[in-house]
Image 1 (cartoon, rainbow, N blue to C red):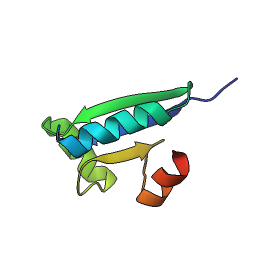
Image 2 (cartoon, helix red, strand yellow):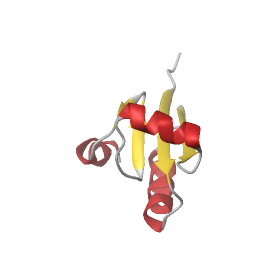
Image 3 (cartoon, rainbow, N blue to C red):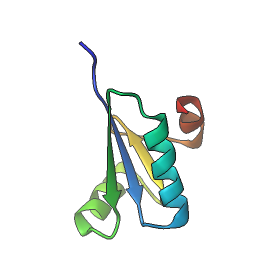
Image 4 (cartoon, helix red, strand yellow):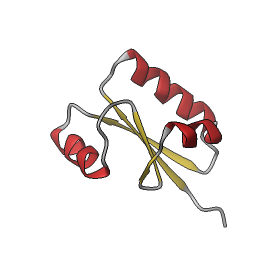
Length: 75
């Protein structure tokens, strides 16, 4: 049984966000579930705040905010 890794991208629709979304989709494994969240949605913004997100684009892997070093290891 393969466990699913939940990968979330928090985006404001900017060019940097779109590039990050594409990078995450390319790097995602077959068992990864990639979800893109629009920060213009108030519920998404509240969740982002609870996760400690202060800027976008931001990537959350299995409920943990990924830092730049984690992203470099993942890709």
